[in-house]
Amino acid sequence: MPESHNSTRKILDVLINDFSPDKFVHFFREKNRSFAPRKEELFQYDDEYFKNGIKIGEIQFTQGKNPPSPPFSKGGMGGFVDEKMLICAFEASQPLSERSGKKAQYEKGKKILKDSQSDAGIFIFHDTDNNFRFSLIYAEYLGVRRRFSYFKRLTFFVSPRLTNKTFLQQIGEGDFSLFESIKEAFSIEPVTRQFYGELQHWYFWAMDKIKFPDDYKYSNDSAKDKEIRNATNLIRLITRIIFIRFLTEKGLIPPELFSREKLGRIIKDFMKGRKASNFS
Image 1 (cartoon, rainbow, N blue to C red):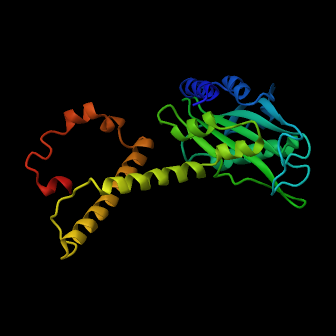
Image 2 (image 1 turned 30 degrees about the vertical axis):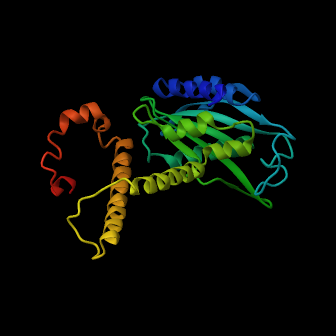
């Protein structure tokens, strides 16, 4: 990993455990040399849901650095003219969660972009428990029509109680030098493709090594019976592991269950009799 990536990931690690909007100044300085701190109170946007709004700064994308690409029109964030991206932060009045307040946060960010005649912004909404949502909102142009990116995408919920692996990988290691590369950093599609690629590789690797109890007959052909049994049960195993990990990431299962040392004190005499019921 490049040294710059190590540096920004360390900054994010500190932010996650001790959140402060001001600490993002250091982060964005590391990510883009064109970032300029422009601290400005945005109290006019405070309401019953959000307060203590501030503009942290902005990134200026200059002509020649950001080549035009659809669906932006000339004059939008396509790069024909100088454009800026705002970075703003708000404190949420209620505790944040993975599902809470996405739409309201999106509408707040969109209004700020419209009022400031800006085409893009990163908006950080946080609570008093170090949880925060890190979102990119930008305008797209179809002819003279202007529309904004979909509010359920291009956003990360970050919490000190979660691993935040995708956020640290995408944002900590992502390229912020161009607007297009910032969009890519917020997109989880590459991460999803990588995940399924690694999962497929592991599946075929495990198929040659794994063995399941033969308490159910799938075929009269012994070779085919073994292949069907292993494939069926391996898929079941994978889906259960993924589901359990999902519940763990949501805080619904204690992480101690993934500690070999602690698990060894919980599970005793497993497979002592090597009975098939152990696997049910």
